[in-house]
Image (tube, rainbow, N blue to C red; front, side):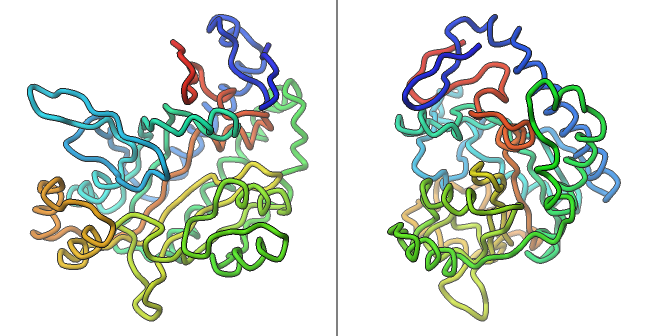
Length: 333
């Protein structure tokens, strides 16, 4: 049972109540099956599962307003991972196709506690493929999500009934062929609706929610402007200033499920992009040494496990898809 506030439900103070809740049990069974279906699909496509690091000298700097967590690692300042992106690229030196279920910690702004879409501690289903283009990797995302949802709906009818989730909501998703919308067109759409979206930035939370609420099936937003994302997103060769990246947005107001891109793997380009985004290349020495020696060109993505679970299970808040949820500013086990 949850506690209602003006911002929506919040986790109960007693973690035992949360774990014993029928809603929690059904949501976590759905999550378990989604991950099992993902592993089944990706292994069938030739991907190797790796165990990602939890700490490192640096982590992904492009964490959308959140802060990183520093720890003392034998006298050196290390970071908790906000994203496995740099390690995914490095791992392609071992295998051409990899995936992992990666833990992430981001100190989100306090206002995110009321969005129903943000956790401080969460997991991503991370995928990376050497030599892949954005078109190939978005097609893989589409096939993967369709397989995960179709398998879960077929296997767990009692869980969906317990949660009151009408699985007819997935009719459009299960047809595949998700629409692609350029970022510039999404901005025009939002401004026409009266939302003052910055054309040079990522879609803000309110804009993303507005587009999501209007959609009847998931869709991709592509071609974000340079400067809105991290240094590792490849710039479009034929359209300078645009990035070969994407987000997958769920319908029904659930918002972003997944982000990905083609990756920059040229040493000089990465150094330039780091400096453009205010990053100090010296901090990334281990990564840059690998890039200089040669890492494969690639494309990849990360799907938020708890966010996908929330959407599939029809939950009001993303914390309901976590056994031990942590929200910004809320002290919890």
